[in-house]
Image (cartoon, rainbow over all chains, first blue to last red; front, side):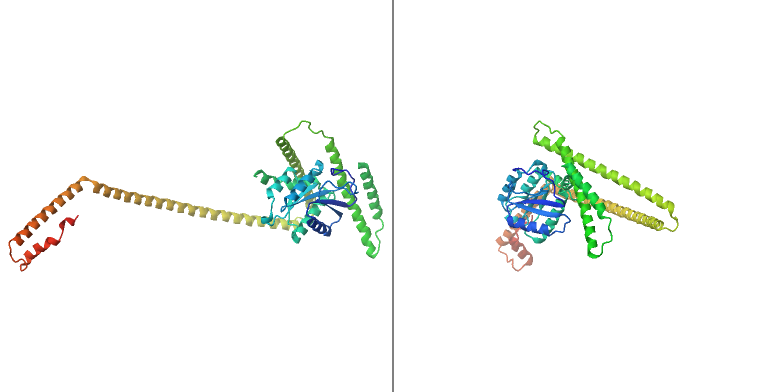
Amino acid sequence: MSVLRPLDKLPGLNTATILLVGTEDALLQQLAEAMLKEDCTSELKVHLAKSLPLPSNVNRPRIDLIVFVVNLHSKHSLRNVEESLHHVDATFFLGKVSFLATGAGQESHCSIHRNTVMKLAHTYRSPLLFCDLEIEDFRAAMAQRLVRMLQICAGHVPSVSALNLLSLLQSSENPSLEDL
Amino acid sequence: METQSEEQAAAEAADSRGEGEPPQVAGPQAARPEDRMALLLRVRAQTKQQLLEYKSMVDANEEKTPEQIMQEKQIEAKIEELEKEIEEAKIAFEMKKLALDRMQLSSALKKHMEKINTKTSVLMDNMKQILSLNKSVMKSQQETRDLEDKLLDVRKKRLQLKQASERKLLEIQTEKNKQKDDLGSMENSGKIKTIQQNLEMEIQITTVIQHVFQNLILGSKANWAEDSALKETVLQLEKNLTMIQ
């Protein structure tokens, strides 16, 4: 299958699956471990991928949240993410996709400007998170945040849906982008 | 897809009712049925939420998308309109919930008030304390307002004094300028020039007369060094009177 669709499979009981897409293997691995360490009432499954499309021979559960990890130090990761975005169905972007930009702490190494990533997130109407995945405390905090988002996107939190969360997250971001 | 999840939910509800029957389980096993019940209830809530999501997706897919190709800006404007509608619906819902909560609270309060003895209850004490606090708050607010008024008066007076001093300094400056102008104009007037010319002429005449006297004395071969008056006249050669200007 070449395009990821959000609701084409039935959800597993009490399981939530997140897909992390990015070129930095070590960082994704560490983030996945931090997320699995989190205290969560539902079972978490973390899938890692370098880029989409995913190989179609593997039997995988329904993916509830996709996080595209962009490393601000390398233009290659941004291009990789942009190409992978073509393989995601449009209905995914109703709250089940998020962008994560790492490496913003070291300004001297950044080859991608913050605004590029912000524009990308704005075009796809998805939330953008900034986190230095190399620092353990920030990684743990971001893992906690992602676990909460994943629970909401998987439908495990009653009365909050992914779309609801999206509109909650967007209201503070848009005014600043209008000034750009 | 939807009927399957409904069946699942029904099965779980039956299970949870069955599990609730035997409560007397001793020791560590007491934790497990409760955990399992909690798990079942949680899964039930999850399935409900997921069912809602699937239903809304089905409803969304039934809506017809506009066939004509709109420009990107128009699409963005439309998206913002729809987002605004969502926000307004959310706000209206929250307001209604708030109003409903208030009504429930006030009716519960009314029923409570009918039952209790109004002199001694904790509620009345709370209300009395609230009233006394409100009074003290109003008093301090009044005091702050008075102080602010006084401050404002003092500031106004300061401003007036500053303006008055500004005016005075301006007057002084204009007077000084007038004096300077007068002096300047006086110097350039013709009167002074004629007086200066007369003075020059007089000085020249005096110098000539002096020189005549000096030459007379020298020419007469008299001994002028003995007489002090003659000495003075001769030695005045050194003073150059034209330098007095």
